[in-house]
Each structure stands twice: as structure tokens, then as C-alpha cells.
Image (cartoon, rainbow over all chains, first blue to last red):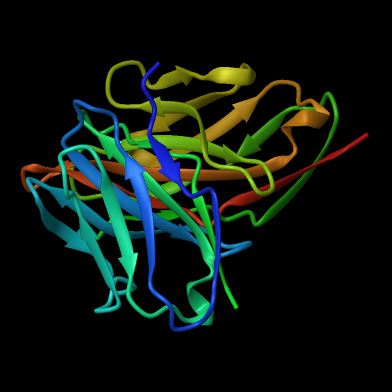
Length: 111
Length: 116
């Protein structure tokens, strides 16, 4: 069964460093998403991406964040200068029909 | 704006007892509704979904949920819980509006504790 894959599964970084989280969505899906879950809290929407551009973003998704689909298969989330409060699990998701398929998540720890 | 309310932060149920987790939603168009389960440190596993049709949907692990449009609810039920059901449960709403597939909005989750 096709699935969304995310790398790395866990990344530890120093505050102020740039981080890129990678996702490979399911191949025929058209809509892509990033979500964030701070430990013990709910899953929060960050950004949606369609037709090679951002279609919607939350207030969490500030200028430190960016997304890209560089090669037609990968979908990346970049955090330019990480802060302690960026420590969270980041989930990628994709859909064709409205049912989102989630990856296993990338755990980011900022020290 | 879409929203999801899960009024119960924690629920404790004895093993073998029945379970109902509540979910109320707000969404401007025809909603797609989902229940996900998350074990500690793990990803999100889809339990079941409602898109249209029969308002009682069956999911994995013996779970079911009923969509009640008049009450804007999508409560999750299981007739007899097992210790392995202890986890965090998230209700989510999404759909199509404005010509695009909306992302999901999640509730804050209900933490299910199973007593022996």
C-alpha cells in the first residue's frame, strides 16, 4: 500500500541552526500538508501546498518557515533559524480525495 | 473557520466496558470527519472516516462512529475496550471548500485510560 515517508525520523539541532525535514508524499496526490505536534498537545496545521504554491498557512507558519517541492516527489519543510519552541513532532500528509494520509513524523529536538 | 471540540480531556474505562468518546465540529461545507489514534511517541493511525452515505461507519479495531448532522457530532464508540486501546484519540474535520482540499483541523484529543 502506498504511504507517505518522512526523513529523518529524529533530528537534534542547536538553537539558531537551519533544519530541513523531508517528505515523500504518495505519488498521485495533489495536496500536501505539514502539521506540528508539540509534546502532549494537539496536532496543529502549519501549511498546505497545491499546484506548487502555498494554498493556506496558519499563524504558526511565520517567516522562519518555508516549504518547497523541488523535484516533483519530495516535499520539504525548512526552518531557517530554529528556536527552542520549535521542538515538536512534524507530520507530513498528502491527499487526492480529501482523506489525508500521514507520514510517521519527524521528531525535532532543539537544544 | 472550522473547529473541533473534544470535551473530555481524560476518560477512564474498565477493561471490557463500553466506550464513547465525544466529538463536536464546526465546518462551513459538507464535512469529512476522522478519528485518529496515537500511542505515546508514535504517529497517527486512522481508525475510521466519514465522507458521505451511511452515518454509522465502522473502523479498525472494533471501533465505530456515528455522524449526526443535526448535532454536529461524530462520536466514537466501542462496545468492549481492551487494555491495548489505551492511547490518545483525536477527532478531525476537513473537506473540500473553495475549490481545494482543506487540511484537517484536529481536536485537542482525549486520553483514554483503561483500568484492569
